Amino acid sequence: MQRNDANMQGLTCHLCKHVLRSPLECQHCEAKFCQKCLLENYQYLGNKRCPNCQVVDDFIPSSASSTLSKLHIMCSQCPQSVAYTDLDNHELTHWTCPHCSE
Image (tube, rainbow, N blue to C red; front, side):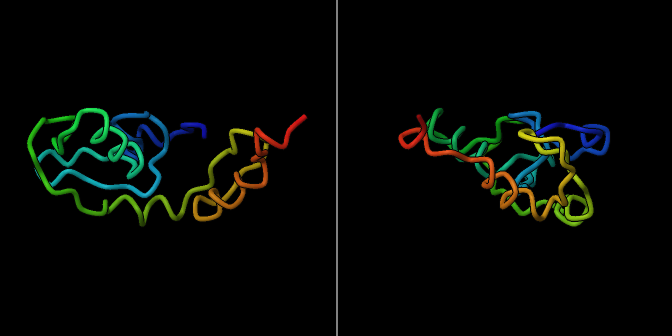
């Protein structure tokens, strides 16, 4: 997924630096993360500290969701601009099973 101008709007994940997907926000420092990135970070480090401020904190759904829902994002697999809310389904059209591919 391409970053577009989302970084200027605070709509990128602090970990992967891409446009937020299922955004969560640290209640302490307000850093935003993709839900998947945050879960992978927890599994890797074995703790539930914020990767930005290191405070053990509860994460809440980010208010960025309403802004994100209005965006169109360039697909990383084709030249098409897709509504943020349709991006997951659109990207699935490009997915190929590595075991079935020849």
